Length: 325
Image (cartoon, rainbow, N blue to C red; front, side):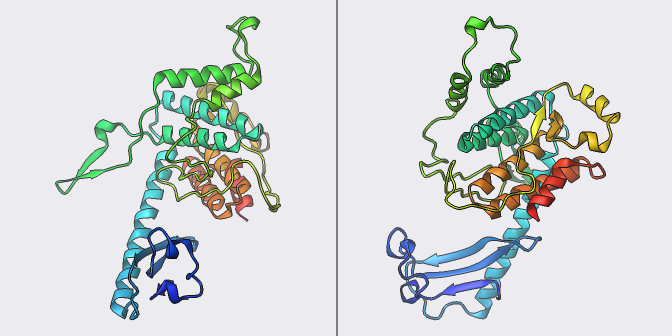
């Protein structure tokens, strides 16, 4: 009730005495944690401390107050980081080249999603978001009050990889008219090439399918890759959004003449790729039975939609709100 949990001795606590972290690994005996509560009221985790020795006296009132202050400050940092993330994902001042690769990665992710390979689809969506979030390493360190303050950095996607992914998308979509039919590969072969773009062993993606997610987002912990052990309620909008890969200017000219109902489909323009990608990542989290993580993605996608077009009739925003409800 007070947003805090104190366990003087985990070995003597029926809730934790048989736990793995108590009997092996770090062998925790003392634990104290203050809840990390988002502005929306969701409990995202805890700011905690622990030790290998029991502490029968627990924490005094001053120590509890200090722990809560640390938790509140941590939440402030997370909210500010989410705000910066949203602003960056609104794709303001992002080059066409970056937008194009982000859209290509999302489009390939959509294809793998429809093929049932949610694991590879998630990694493609992650690459899409990380491309939008890319920071030039030459400006990755900023000075604050004379001190160097590091900011999140991502390695730019090499030109060769960008070209390979674009060509794969063109061939899978049967839009590559430059190759003779004899050189065109089957869809299965092309999909295998897409999967091969990602290493089979990745320190951030263990064999059990736990994905730590995109830097700057709240922690993701899917326990399954492509299967579900129980039936979840159906979402209002259960399809993925697709990206219009045509020239952005042409797209905008068409939209100016379109009515809101004509725009209400599951396709978004290339320069709004990030909100569609976040929505799609929420869909995967829901399939992975991580409803809390899905809520975070839908909420962030809606937030980015508001930033991009606060007064527009936005299908992504509507889909997010309905799915969260």
